[in-house]
Length: 329
Image 1 (cartoon, rainbow, N blue to C red):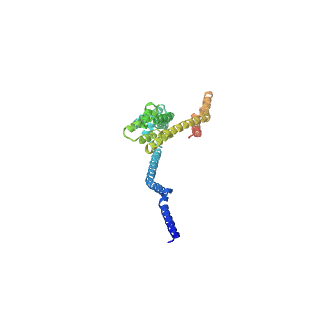
Image 2: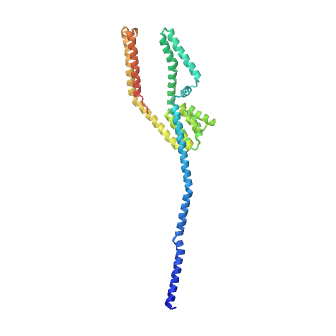
Image 3: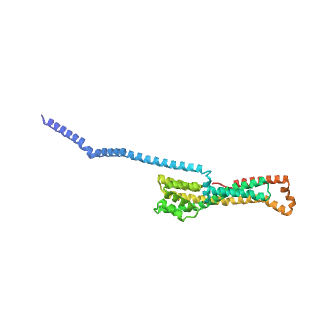
């Protein structure tokens, strides 16, 4: 073998050794092995994270279902509250009567409404009409008037009560303790309504169910907002202080809007009152000046018929004007 052949063999051996070393050592030096390990680790983490992601999705779905159930329950209560039973209406008016006491009072008023006109010599039909008005109309009107007055007082104080709950929650107090503070320190009727919630929770009823009963006793939109916020937070969680803070702002804005509506509608209400009082005032002035002229309205059959027609038209006009100047928002 010549020297050239030896050199060629040595060169080939070196080249083979270099190629083998390159194939074995280069992946470690270039980082390909580390890259493969990292890709494998990332893929393994992705596979293991899928159940966690699925668990989070299941929790979100459960929360959505809970919120939907709460809203459906609130909607059902609203439909049932359109015409509440008599005992509920008595409670909404702030009275402590029972149904039996209410019926006794209504019957007594009906008897007085029948007997008093009868002793005064009024016709039997007039006595029956007076008994119907006194026994059925007056108690129902009284319940409606007291309910409206009580709801107005409740709305004036509710925003302050919500602010107390917000400050208590931000200070770290449980919501039950915050409601107990409102039930002790707030003005009526907010104090009695929140005290009823605390009493219900003391009997073992969950807080969200006790709060839901607030709308049954106080059927106003603001109370409904409060019920929705607290019920959803109790079932699904969330930042209660921020939500109630926004609710308090909404309540105060609604109160301001209501005051603006009342102020802007006062001119129309004054005009309606003046227009409605003109016919009776003219009738009184004519009677004072010439009583024989105006007395034909109640001394003759035609006059009585005209007087009844005038009263009906006046009542219709007053109701139309009342509908026009009462703004719902």
